[in-house]
Length: 97
Image (cartoon, rainbow, N blue to C red; front, top):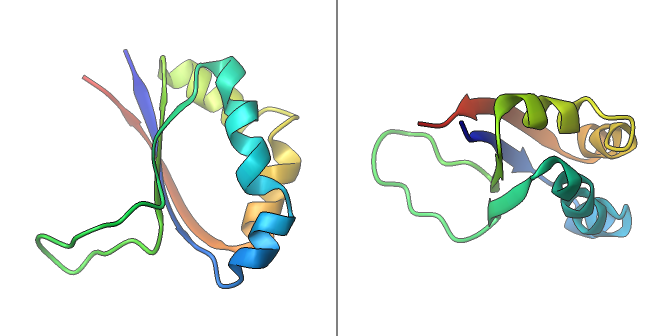
């Protein structure tokens, strides 16, 4: 069953984020775990309520096990630390249908 990593990421200094290599490397690190980006900071329109993410990212994985394996991997750890230093993030893992 597919699983989705949903991230609401606010990046105050996008140039520092780009220079860190995060945007270039993380898709390459997610790919061996079956991670496919479905949305990455595209245009959004608020339809209901008061929630409007700063920058929405959706990555699809084959299952929750692969998603968590990616998130907890040694390869991703330095980039997770970079994201946590350069951005404010809210992440959830969602099991698909």
